[in-house]
Length: 188
Image (cartoon, rainbow, N blue to C red; front, side, top):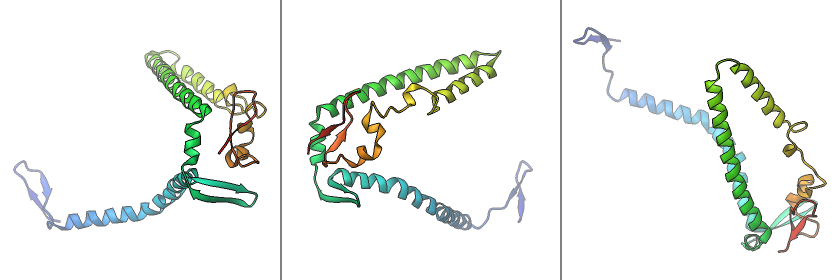
């Protein structure tokens, strides 16, 4: 490789042939896409396909049997029933309010805790260890927060996920009712 001296005395490599570096970059880009293509195919198979299949199933009448399920016709009646359901509208409103409140509380508490830990000079490591221990306790599914424990007797759809996903025996879609009530069926 040849070098040339500049006016400042720093040796710089001589310019290479004009198009050679662009060809090399294109080859590296192709090689990079070749290495990432299998991962992208797997990601597409486990994310995009289930989403598309869920949309197709939501627009179809699904009949669930012991040997599988069948899709009968494409219709929007499932969404029509859903939109006209008072329970769904109540659930949607409750979910929106719950999301806004919990996100706001988490942001405020997280900011306060971060600011306190930033100002704390003595015992900072102990305080962080205490917070991480509490975090681990809260999110432990067997001994943690009572919100993480499922109560199959009180919430029927949580106790029997296959029944909630596949539909009830008479072919109507189950909806979870208020605490203590039985599973309500949504007519088609």
